[in-house]
Length: 258
Image 1 (cartoon, rainbow, N blue to C red):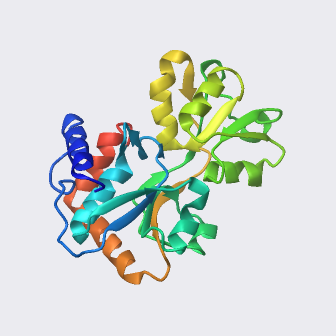
Image 2 (tube, one colour):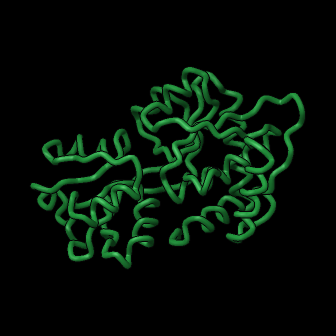
């Protein structure tokens, strides 16, 4: 962890939110072991985000657990989303744990762990346009879509609907505010973030469009040459699933998860 103060804050947050003990309990890393540098773009609640000065969310809990399993201190390294893979391949970070979908183009640049969560692209819309998507192609004509640059939602718009006007936002909160003001007609992102924003802004007239637009899996990424770390990460995931702790942390942060 970055400091004992950060560790204490994370543990207090875990207690208050009812996280299960065991896998996600922190331990002090043995002296001399290199820190595990975890690359994150903390603007995707509930997966990875900032709570005050601390990094929180599904990915943060899993990163701390992975560090514990490897006997390595965890250092969260904040990197802009478009630069994460470059930072990994340049040796500035050891692993990306930042709600990254496994895609074929990305597989040419990084080695992905086994998937840990299935998601899809979904849309946040104003309540009076809940069924805006359907049929999808026709409904987007002359619409303005908010996306995060370089995400699978952005790529979906470019590939399937190249004439649609896109506006870029660095956070879901900014996109939701723009949607409320009518600056965009919908915001497309991972289903985890869209459900989160739907809960936050439900009383302000924003809802989740019920149709998923894609079927994707999230995974963690390491350098393609780091075979040892990849094997360790997959072993960690196997144990976390078998113990039920991975499900518990997912249910803690994603209450709609079935």
